[in-house]
Image 1 (cartoon, one colour):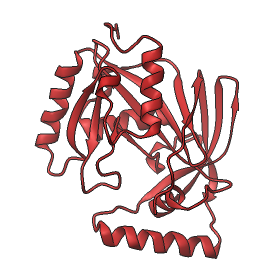
Image 2 (tube, helix red, strand yellow):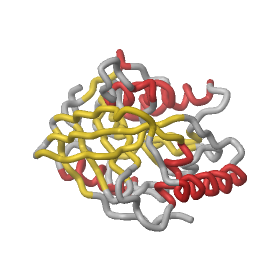
Image 3 (tube, rainbow, N blue to C red):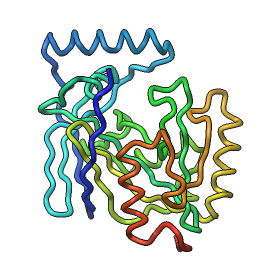
Image 4 (cartoon, rainbow, N blue to C red):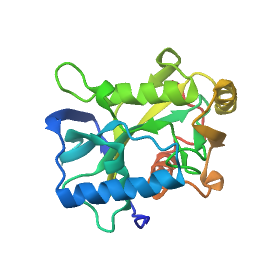
Length: 247
C-alpha cells in the first residue's frame, strides 16, 4: 500500500535545533504487529531491504524562521510503515536532511535511486534518514553533518570540495518533514555530474543508477516527488536556477 502524495508546505529557516529524546520510541502492540507485517511484505519483495536503527521526528514546532525538533530512535521498518499507513500517524513523522547539490553554473545535480533500494526509481538529491551516528555528545542531532555524510557515501563528494549555503528549507506534510540545504560545488554541474558518475562506476553496489543535471522546469521528470518539485520550483522562483552562482 502506498499513501497518497500530498502537496508539501515550504518554510524558509535560519536555524534548526534538533535533539534526541531519551530511550527508543515505544509503539503499541497493535502498531508493532502492523510494522512487522508491513516490513515482512516489503522484505519479501526486496530481499536486500535494510532494517537498521534510524531517528524519527516526534514533537516539533516552527518559531518564525526557526525549527525546534525532537527525534526518537526506531527501526527502519517503523519508518516504512509510517509512510505507507492509510492515515498519517498523530505523533510521528519521517524526517531527513537532504543536500541540494548545485554546480557553479547554478545547475542542480540529482541521482535516480537504484532498483535494489527502498526508493527505487525516485529522483532525489543525496539524502538519508538521520541515525545514531548523527548524535553529538550533548544529545543534539547533527543534521548538517548528516547532509555531508550522505553526500560522501552516495556521491563520493567530500566536505572540503563543497560549501553549505546559509539556512535551511523545510518542506512538510502530514507524514514527512524534509530539511534541504543547498550545497555548492566549485565546478559546473555537468562536470560535477561526471564526477559522481565515475564514483558510482567504481562502487561495488552504487545507490543510484543515473545522474541528472536539472536546470529548469523542462528537466522535471517522472520519479521526482511533490517535495522535490516544490523545492525546485521555489529555487527557480528565487532566480537561482539559470545564472552563474559564486560559491
